Length: 391
Image 1: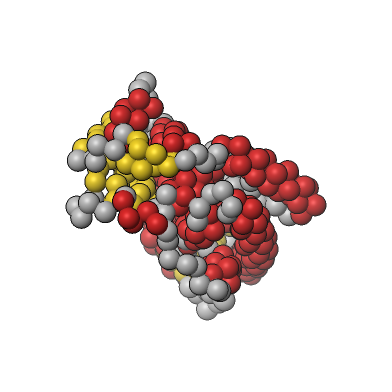
Image 2: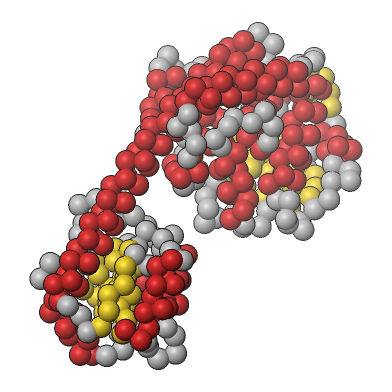
């Protein structure tokens, strides 16, 4: 689908005809009002659309051309660039194909040859007006969906802040975890196409769904994250045990201390959720690398996951974080639990999310004296977080 034309930009007209004389007459009739681009074949028109689709609002094409008919081009445009208004010019002998194209929805209007110049100018102006009206409508809908989207994300952040506050007595640094998780979700590059949020206009039904989901997510988090005492744990052995039978994930453990002081209940949840998140995100991949090793300065253990660059992986994570209905299961919830479990150990989670780069997840767990705690949050951290969501 083409990129939207700026609201104040005048759309270009693309005229397709293999006859130079026809191109000359069309330009003479139209170019005083609009910028005209021309192509001499369907192939040329497709190439021009590929580089100028963000500027073109109307395509006018002759029916009879070498190799490929005009209706074939307009059918392609209807599939690839549905916003563009499509007009067919044809001789009387080809009227049947033109009428069929109108009935099938491939074109807006057809104009018979030889042209009546006034009729041609009128039809083209009407097509441009229709294109501009559609563009304004799409802009207004996008703005409305964007406002609804931001409102819902803010409401979800409020729910998570309340949840974290309730968890604080038993789960350490839970507010830090929520701050980190929401900041990740708010990244501009993670937000999918705004059209994915169509359907949120029914605010009443959406509010009911969001409330039910909030209850479900709260119950899941509080049930799953049950802290125990910190004790000596062989993290390498635990990874090998929990990772048995996990297809497609190659687990590598190296240079770890013999034992680590970890919360037995929370570290089990962390590993299980990390393995589940990895398996869900890279379901189509044959091999994903999961490495667990001590940092170079021996102050922490780093657990990292990286798989092949795959647009579906990024899309899956983005959609799960911004989905229309806040589901009570899925990658977004696993990632939230991962943040809470890591922060309970005074650690943190880093996700490198970019549609143009491989997705990578890293869990940083301090060891020894570094496990005492995280730096206190600033007094205005919630205000800072909501500013991220607003922008």
